[in-house]
Image 1 (tube, rainbow, N blue to C red):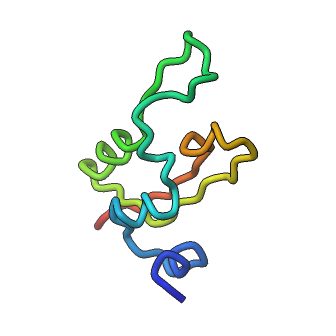
Image 2 (image 1 turned 180 degrees about the vertical axis):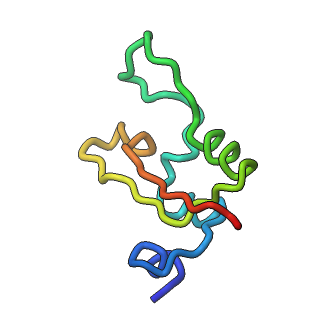
Length: 86
């Protein structure tokens, strides 16, 4: 079992950006999906992750949903679990 799978199933290890990108590429989207409303303000998840890292919170688990339409690839819903660095 590789490190990514171990972190998904309970052995929570710190995930770096390369590991996050392998599991959840949508974290690194740099713009909103084309069908998103013009009233929506896009905030890149990667900036949120970077800010939390600066505050001592480290990503230990990441998941994203499967897309049904090809045009939504890279913009799927994702979840990241953080753990406080001690």
